[in-house]
Each structure stands twice: as structure tokens, then as C-alpha cells.
Length: 183
Image 1 (tube, rainbow, N blue to C red):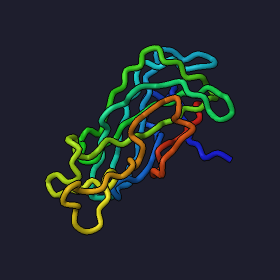
Image 2: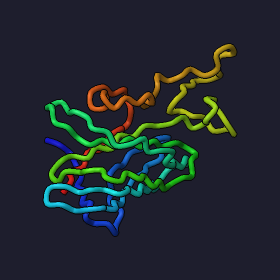
Image 3: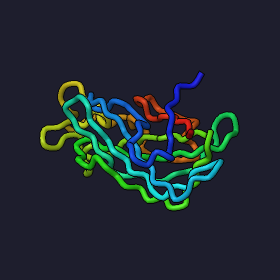
Image 4: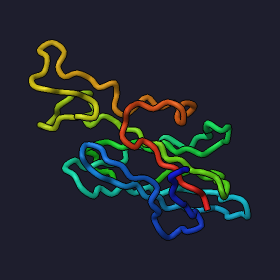
């Protein structure tokens, strides 16, 4: 049994839900609006995808920092799938991202996988900035060690992205992936 959503790239007017998760105690969803260059009998030729992130509940807002691209990956059954890697970041106010992908072919009746990676909240690698502690990347229980500071998590979730391993190896992260059926 699979738990999947449905995408209809022919619907070019509406944002469609493609992913939902929780990080830093904040529940959020990501939506996508497709712009097609061509709609064929067996595939969609995509010009661009507009991504929109909505924070629903929680104290830390997340934003989209980057879309690294759409990759062809092989699943456990040997099938080639399309995977898009979307980076989010806490305390990032960019809730929209326009991804230009002119000529991207999405076969109908195939799977479109969104892989979410998380960038550290503070770009300079510090555990605390402006009194906000990055608990997805660092661990603390009491005072920081005087020599090493706070302990690094190994990372939570995985941040070194390798598309060839995307469907095979997962750390103990929270909901890093969503699968959608292309209608």
C-alpha cells in the first residue's frame, strides 16, 4: 500500500498540495502551480513550477531557500521517477519560489516525488542567533560545553543531498518526502 497524492499539471490555475510536514514545531505545507508548454496524450511538457509554502501553526516560520532541480532517480523496483529537491529553512520569509524548467517532461500515470531538505536556521553555522536555538541541527540539555559549544546533530534531517541515494537511505528525519501521482 502506498500513500500518495494526485497532481494534475493540466490545471494551470490552482496551486496543488504536494507536501506537508512539521519542523521546529511548525506545521507547514508546500503547494505547486504548473505552467505547461504542451499537453500531450502521454505527458506534460512543463515550462515552470511555482512553489508556495504556507506555515499553519508554530512559532518558527519556514521559507523556501532553493529548488535544486528535478532529477531522474530509480526506485527500489527499478522504475525511473522524477524527483524535485526543495530546500526549506527556518526564519526564512521567502514563501514563494519560481522554478524555471523549460522542456521538463512529466509522463502521465507516473510518480512525482518531492524531497525536502533542511538548511540550518542560521547561515553562519551557529546554534543560537538572536536568542533562537536551532534544535533541528544542534542538541542541548543544560549548559553548552565550554570548549565545543552545543553538540551537533548528525544532521537532522540529512542535508548533504545526493539524488542517486534519495530513495534508498534516510536518517531519522521527520517526513522528508512526498509522492504524488501524475494524472
